[in-house]
Image 1: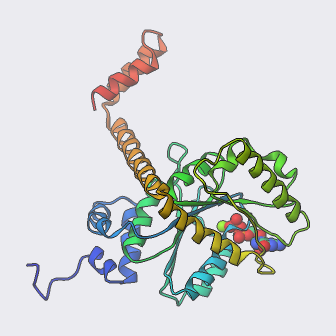
Image 2: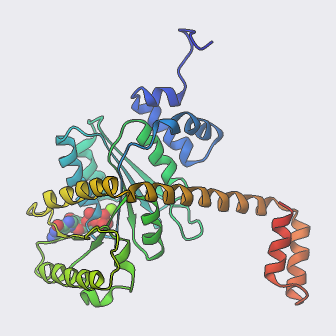
Image 3: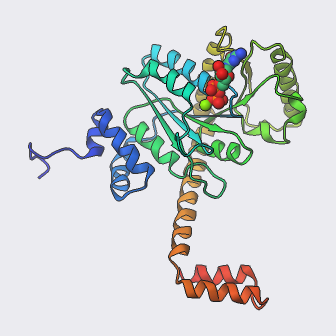
Length: 320
Ligand SMILES: Nc1nc2c(ncn2[C@@H]2O[C@H](COP(=O)(O)OP(=O)(O)O)[C@@H](O)[C@H]2O)c(=O)[nH]1
Ligand SMILES: [Mg+2]
């Protein structure tokens, strides 16, 4: 059977062989978590683990997609195949893509070495689209490297993107109010590289300087024991300034991950997060399949103060 020359290759096999249309179909199956998607992943997964997964997060309109477009240009010149996963929780209709994105991405329409995929995140426990990493695995197996995951940062998501990526770029935008004063404590810590976008704006230099100062204070407080000095890079898509510095910083961070051993730890953390999301997803699925009367009876007992919600949850879990 295996050597039957007439056997049609599976979608996953075609994906591994470089068939982009097969890849697109596999991505849809993975995104929808179909049986075929799961089987495709079984085949693809042993071929993963090579790509540099880069997260980029920041406020809407912060210049993330513009920057990603510049990255694509740089990496294509280096002959690398680039995948972009744009995750947007706010727009289920467009699946995350704005009109600007569509126009920008037309540049790569005829280029087989660039693949942009938009995903609307189905909200799940405050996390990212639940199958985001699985989509990244498919790109990885198909030979894309790097893979960029673009997400809108809303506190929660910023933390979860850090669990999905090896290198996280945290975007800060000048001229949006009270600068570094508005930063939430700890929110900078998820960034491996801090990026001040729209560097052509008058407030950009000051913001970059403030961020460097904050980073120094963090250093003094010993928050960067691992030995990676978080760089602050100011970029402008209009003048082109800083783009090369930023792609160099990304490459340096990848190198550092390899030499320091921190990369192996991150991969473990990413896989732990991926399994945990799958477990939550599975449990929630089973919860909705539970006997409706049983669930209602438990709710009644909690309403009448005869049972705590914690005990009710234990009872449901023990029956799964
Ligand atoms: N002045 C200036 N505007 C920029 C720069 N980068 C992006 N923009 C503008 O900011 C807006 C939002 O950009 P976009 O990349 O779509 O932001 P995203 O929502 O973070 O992906 C667009 O109108 C861009 O033209 C920049 O470097 N300088
Ligand atoms: Mg965008």
